[in-house]
Structure formats: C-alpha cells, structure tokens
Length: 195
Image (cartoon, rainbow, N blue to C red; front, side):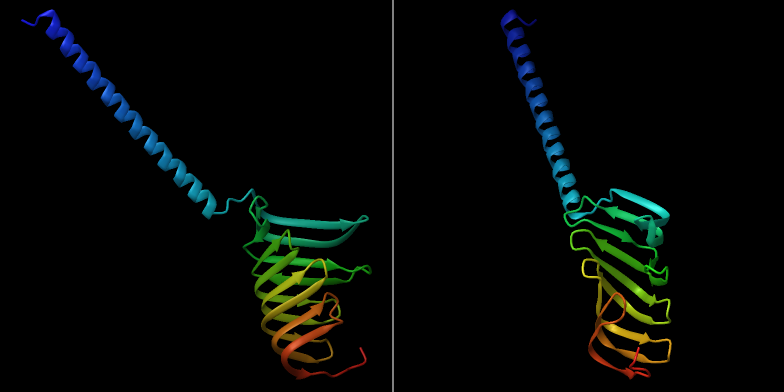
C-alpha cells in the first residue's frame, strides 16, 4: 500500500509530466504556426494576387460626352495593389480609337498589359494597327506611351499605306497619327511623298 508521502510524490511527478507534455505541445503548435506564417508571407511576396477579374469586357472612354476609345477583351485582370500596378488583358484585346472627326483606328493584339505608373501599354503577339485611311502596321510586340502618344518597338515590323507604299525592318517608333516615323533598320518603297 502507498503511504501519503509516496502518494504525494507520485502526484507531483505526474503533474510535472503533464506540464512537460503541455509545454511540448505548445512549443510544437507555435513552431507550426510560425512555419505557416512564414510560408504565407513567402507566397504573398512571390506571387501577384489580382484585385479584380472580368470576363467579356467592353469599356468605353469618353471626353466631354464623346467616345474617344473602346476596349474589348475576353478577360481583364486588375493588379492595382501590386508594387508596380498594372491591368492585364491575357486573352486578346481590341482597341478602337476615334479622332475628333469620328474616324476609327483599330489596334488588335493577342495580349496587352497596361502599366499604371508609367502609363505604357505593352501589346504582345500578332499586333496590328489599322487606320481609317488604309495604313496598316504589323509586329509581334508594340509599346504605346500614353503620355506622349507615341508607339515604339524593337521587333521586326511591316507597314503598308493605302497607295501601296510599304516599309519593313527592325525597330521603329512613331506618333499616334502615323505622321512622324523614326526607323532603325528598314527598307521599302514609298509611292507618294506628298501625303
């Protein structure tokens, strides 16, 4: 039979053992939480999380009640909370620009990314610009500087005019209205210099 002193000794040992198990469990739980917290922080730092997504969009930009441009795309993904905010159109984009006379210029690309801080739009894949007066430019990638209304690319391009003139080469930059061209390496045929 166990006397009172031995009983007290066994109970204290059991309490210490239970306390040890509880402390060990707490340490394991805290380490597990810290590990999960670090994983969440790592994932957040290395991935973009869109703030919004839309399918089959048709946006209209107006100024003084007049439609200045429209943007159509199968998908739009907004990353406005990223360090360098941008909007992506990953599934084709069609932009229609209207001048003051209502004339249309269309821009088509497989994909587009609009960077908010720099106000540069990156058009990617099968880029084609067609103006109301028959000018067509084709390239694989084209940037548009919205502040300066200026297009540029370092990629091969082809440009055709309505009168049969054409230019082709690698690297070009030009004004939004196709009136000023700067070309790096090109060749072609110009039929009418008086336009």
